[in-house]
Image (cartoon, rainbow, N blue to C red):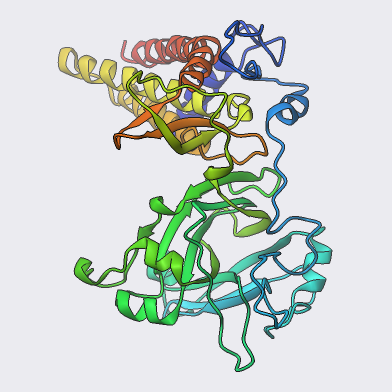
Length: 432
């Protein structure tokens, strides 16, 4: 019975929200040009559901040509920092078993653990130029499968080094302070971690987790890759013990002595497949300032602080997340009011709770990053750092986001609220 009501609630919400007639932009992947001479390009807005030519829309504003790693890079990452030994950018892989059991990679081709550019060559060939595989978690037989420690005390990762090894076999380091972050295209459930020099690691006095950012793809589907850029300032510090902040080395020092990048494959009970497709620096200094204007009239821009891509306005994920959040909030408010005013039957309570759970699931499945996390070859300034030290969002971003809200977010939110009303009325009818 619980499953039935859960499916009904989710199905009803999806049916109305995904209906062809639910939105005024459902027949096309674009809207009329915004008449604003400040904007170098008019927005490209996809219809929210049932897009038939979304690839064309994406190509208009989301072409990304990563230089560090892509499907034509061969067997090594093109770091540009080789120390003369021709060993930079070599992919290596590591597993760390734990008390809960073993962890291992299942590769689609032959893989060795040697530090050699050919160690994963067969795998990369089998993956069509990317680095793909599956992480297998094997539990100890004397522990129940439900034990969290059976999974989370183990780790599987791949990594590469920017400078490579010197003649003595030591990993070299680079000064990456001129770069602002890292961009990754991937499928699966991953975290990205910086690998600083040994001297920095020892000064930090923290565990091997180090400085790391989480970039999750909750759907974890190989058929749907995700592109994300993360500024280094957003990386967090993780430790297995108590953190002594007085001994934490500043990020600029970590970047000044950077050895490489580690990609950790997080445990996901649904699927542990992964695919690393593209990697590049996130360098916002290359973004031109000439075609953008600060919203704050007192701001004298000195450099770009964050950027956005036209293609960020071609996805319904953000709008659906906003609409789902609002629909859930409304439904929960109605439920609480009904419980205060009435004695609800168990059937009605179960129906309402499962409707809320369904909305939670939908929101979790489709949650997306905020604007400013997608890579592209033609980014635009989202915000500036001003001469007085303040920050200002650009007029152009506000214009585009306003159009996105009017054409995508608001109509979808209205339809989701209508769906929530229908589900609420149905659940309340069970109380009669």
